[in-house]
Image (tube, helix red, strand yellow):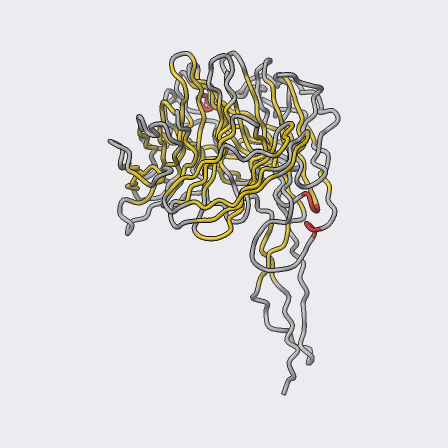
Length: 515
C-alpha cells in the first residue's frame, strides 16, 4: 500500500449546540409563560479524538474525514449555525504520551515524542471525503474540531493495516467523542492477548480516570486503576494485564469513568494467533441489545455480556437473518450474574449468511440492563483475523461510516422489531465519483445486506450514511474486508448516531389581550 507524507485528520472537543433563547415578557411586564416546545437545530461545533493507531513500524494508517450533506433529520424547524459556511479547524497532534507511559502502553520510561503532523488534511465541503495517510509507530493521537456547516455529522474513520508482527491485522475505528463513561465487553488479560485501553484527553485541563475490570467471578483485584491522571492534551495507553494480579482471564469487561474532565477511550486488542483490532465502546446498559453485521463466513463467534446492576440477567439469544429471526442451535439463552462477565461460544452461527445477534430478556417482565460485545474470527489455522462488534443503539436520525472501498464493503441493516424504511447514501469518492442514494425497506425481524451501493465512477474511498425514514428501529454495521497474503483481514464498525442536531428550547411570547 503506497503511503505519502504524514498528513492527518482529526477531531476532538465536545459537541456544542445553539443554546441561546429569548426571554420574553407580557405587555404588563410580567414574565411570559415558560417555553415548553423545543426544536432541533444543527450543532455549531463537533469534535472527535483518534487514539495512537499502532506501535508497529510497518503499520499503514488511512484517515478519512467526512461531513454528510444537509443538517440531519429531526422534528422542528429552523436554521442555525450548521446551515451557514463552516470550516474544519486544523487538527492537532498530541505531541506527547503522559509521563510514565510508553507509546505501547503500560508503565515505564516516557515514550519518544512523536513528530508533529504536517499539512493537515481537513474536510472542506459537505459530501466529499478527505483522506490522509501515515506510516509507522510514531503517529500520534489526534484532536481537532469542525464548525458551521461542516459540524453536523462530522466523522473520522481510522483504518490501519499491520501486515506482519504481533499486532498483525486490519484495525478499524470510528474516532470518538470525548465522554466520561465507557463500557468494553470482550476485552482480555489472557497470556495470548495484549489489550491496551487508550485514554486520550483533548482538553487544556487534566482529566482523572478510573478503570474497573470484571471477570467471570466479578470485580478483579486491581492496582493502579483509580485516579489515573491523563494530563492536558495527552494520551495514556494502559496494558490491562498489568492492572490486576488476576491476569490470564479470557473474558473481561472494562469500565472506564472519569472523576474529572473527559477522555476519548478505546481498547486495542491483539491476539498472538488470531490477529488484532479495536474494541469500540458498547452501547449504554439496556435490557435488550443488537449486535449487527456478523460476517457470513465467520468461523468463530463468541458472545460476552456483563450485568452492571444488582439483578442477574437471563437473556434470550436470537440471530436476525435475511429470512427472519431464528434461535441458534444449542445457544438459545445466556445467564449473566450481577456484576460478573458471562460468555458463550456460538459455533456455526451464521451458516453462510450475514446476520445480527439480538439479545432480549427471557422474561419480558424482568428486564435487566446489560452491556455486550462479540468477538468474531474469520479464517482458519495460521490465516485468521479477529474483529469485535459491540452492541449498538438504533440510528435515530443519521449515522455515517466514512472509509469504504469499491470492493470489500458490506452494509448490514437490521430491524429487530417493526418494518423500517431507510435512506442509504454512498458519497462521492475522495478522489472522484458521483454520489448515489437508495431507499431500502428492511422487513420486520430481518437483516438486509448491501454490497453494491457504490458511487458512480468511484476513485478513492467513500462514506456510507444511513438515515431512517419511517417505521421501526434500525441498527447498522459496515464490514470492511481487505485480504492480504491469504489472511482474511477485516474490521467491523457499527453506525453510531452522529448527533448532528440538538434539541433546544423554543422561545414563546403570548401577545393576547389582557383583561
